[in-house]
Structures are given as C-alpha cells and as structure tokens.
Length: 245
Picture 1 (tube, rainbow, N blue to C red):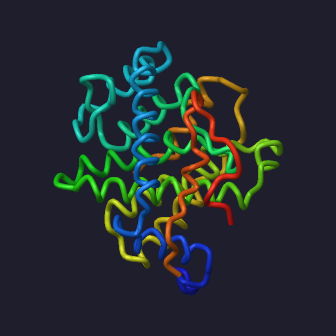
Picture 2 (cartoon, rainbow, N blue to C red; picture 1 turned 90 degrees about the vertical axis):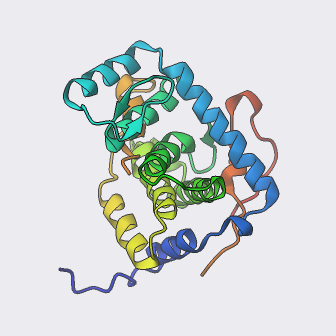
C-alpha cells in the first residue's frame, strides 16, 4: 500500500471533487439541452456503425467467448458483459468517424463517455434521467479539459487522445453515475490514468476506432460545459466556445 495520501495530487482531487459534487440542479439549462443533442448524435453514429463489417467482426468475436448478458449492444439485439458491451458500443460510435469532436481538447468525447456510462446504468436499474444527464455532463466536461491541458501538440507527438485523454471522460461519467465518494473517485481516476498511454494508429484504421472504445471499460465548480466545443460535424460550432479555462 502506498504511503502517500490519496489527496496529495491537487489536480486529481479537484477532478474527483467536481465529479462527485456535481448536481443536476447545478447544470445550466443550455448545457442540459446541449448534452442531450450530443448524446443523440453519438447514439445515431452507433446505430449506423452497427452494420459496418469491422463492427460485426468485433461483435462476433466477443460473442464467441462472452455469453453473459449484462449490457446491450446498441443497434442490435445482442447482449454482452458490461465491459465488452462498452468496448463494442464505443467502437460503434467511432466506427465511421462521424461522431462529435472537441476541437481544442482534441477528443471524440461521446465515444469514450457514453459506453461506460450506459453500462453502469444497466447495472444499476432505477437511475433517473437527471442522474444520467448529470453523469454525462461530468464525462463531457472532464476529458476535454485534460486534453486542453495536454495541448493539441499531444496528437502531433504520436499519442492517441482517445486513450490518453478519453479515460478521464470515461471514469468521470462512470464515477458520477456510481455516486462514488470523493476518495473513491480519486482512486478510480488515478487507476484509469495508469491505463491510459497509447500511441496513435494510422488514421482511419480499424485499430484506431477500437482504441477509442478501450477508454470506456466501466473546489466545486459550476459546469460551464466544454460540451459547447463538442459539435456534431454536421453543424460545427462557431466562435470562441464557453468552457475555456
């Protein structure tokens, strides 16, 4: 056991405090409207992706060894274990690279936030719609902010942000959905960060699409939702986004 206190890293602690303290009532109405749009956009991408050949390869391969039924695979009647369903669903969202992108944080946020969050929701029946939305806001808020700190040169150096940054979105959304205590969220965030490093794959490769999904296994700030940067590509956001540092 480490002799260092879990609160020794102020940045991890800050993430944990924000995520665990976030209430639906704290989220501005325009951010709630935006997060709903972003979620629908990601789900639409996944429905399209469910019919693509590389998506079918992944689903069929996992189904050969996974007979559990913990969570559903979007756009199909398949069910897999929660971790494998999250893996597939993240792949489906990114399957044709039509999904949302945070242009400053350089991250496809829906593909890494929603699969883990929905898997948690299926494992915890009775979660309210408000709780689901608050958890989604936590994920969409944290990952891009980490990406903004890393800088866009992070990608140019050969790293794949879906893994290096996406894990922070995945763990933030899941931690909020699980109603973790701050101390638990600190450990969850640190554990996921240790799993994050990933080098970039060739652009538009099947490996790249699946790697996005690997990020999604399952002082209190007012959210200003960096989600405003996460525009569906059909209607790219214009002007300086809210949610800057």
